[in-house]
Length: 211
Image 1 (cartoon, rainbow, N blue to C red):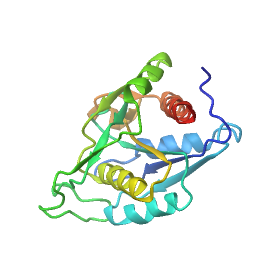
Image 2 (cartoon, rainbow, N blue to C red):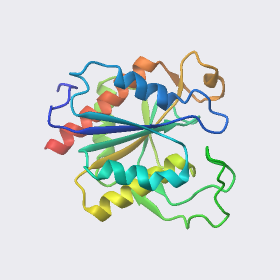
Image 3 (cartoon, rainbow, N blue to C red):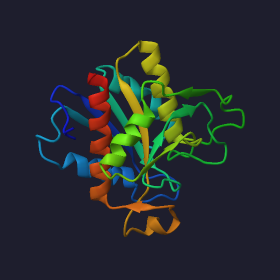
């Protein structure tokens, strides 16, 4: 089956700017690389670069969902990612240990542990497609307790509340091979591998949603 997307599929990809000790956020580099591809490859695609700030999450999501895309692929960096880290759900937890890029630290009572599973995606089928495409990846039931997880949690909540047809997924990416961040990361991928991987994720989800 072709990895190219059908022209009518509308995809929005988000990524984060730098935060904490992470300089040169791999997800931002990935977003830039995707944007630089051909107009034909990017037909129906939109891109949004976000600050790693809790307070901005709701407004960013409302802007995206004001004209809901078919697919919302959110990306961010994780030192624990071994290839593409496919998050199967998110929680309302926000860690009081880490400040966001604006310096905000959630209080100790932030979140109750409520979790939302992403039931719109057949992760076994998605992983099979990525395996066929040779994309390094793994599924994860822990999206963390930082802004990435918060964005995913709020996205799943808002999509359900609006009864939107959007399929959303958060994909954590590892370090980019050859960068200083690789030294403290569980794995690394080349930028080209990340681009190919995200395109493969979008193609697989597009095919599934069209069935």
